[in-house]
Length: 178
Image (tube, rainbow, N blue to C red; front, side, top):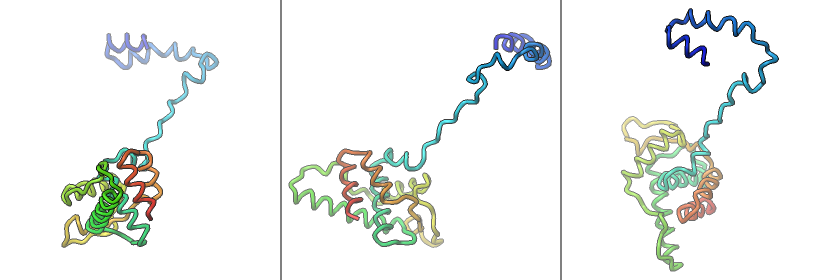
């Protein structure tokens, strides 16, 4: 490395560099090299969609949980945002009712988000590949575009268990109630 730096930085000439390293490379013996010195670096595995699930925000996980519940309960070929948001709203209302009946004071992060905010989160799930386009309706908007859920309820249950806390517990109940 020292020779390479010295020749290249002083002359900036590739032919001079090659001429300077010709003899040292030609006299190099393979027995002088250790396997670690010429072994290629091992690539690190890139994270999969399942690895990223526990890092999703609560709203995204809530919508994904609602979508996988619909897919599991009704074996739907595809779903749209309106259907998922309606199911999500029903699950939030049911959770609030159960919490008030049991005397719980706080909901613990489980809240009903505005449809516009939820639609934005739904679109991000599509951008990230967690839901995939099934078909599109040309006249409608993003709310009526049809999607397939690319993840099962078991995967979502695993992710919400990793999240933990009140949000994880609430979404975990949604997964178990299937």
